[in-house]
Image (cartoon, rainbow, N blue to C red; front, side, top):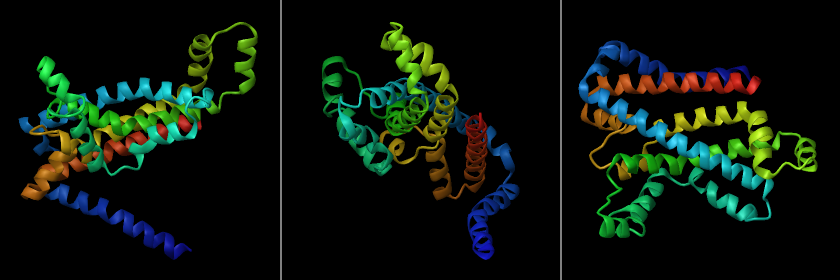
Length: 247
């Protein structure tokens, strides 16, 4: 058993060790000070933040619906909203192209009627990230609401509280740590999304796309710096989620 644990540790640790070794010989974080790289980091942060805010609202509402309105849609509808969790990201991005592209189901009328183009803009990046992370937030919210004692909800209803009051005054405060953990996880997932954003980004670049472009182009310095940046961000996210979980 111990040998298997050591073998697993060597396997999972070797990529991180390799990244640190390459990072140390390629100039460190200094390469990230390039204007083009800073612009990519800013684009990633802004779009991921926008997608996370949308997912926090919609995902929380969906989590509430599937916890307390089980008869309205049931398991089939919940599975439908959870599909992006298991879809290949490239397939998700292609579907978004078909729906919101210039000649797409939704994007076509918007472009022809109002001259609005969604794909290959910052809005497309937000949509792609939102599509991918909303199921994560939905599941976090549903898990949080399930942990609220049902007697509290029944007592509030017996005292005349409506659904909105129960949601605002009881469910959200008692579920706050899990919901905050869900938001943090969704943000990390959004900023690290590659496949779906790659399909809809056009000339725009996020951190994962830039890592791919630089790695394929032989510029390992930028790829190392951005990769380590994402590793550190992911590590901080896991620490925060664990701390909130303990609370």
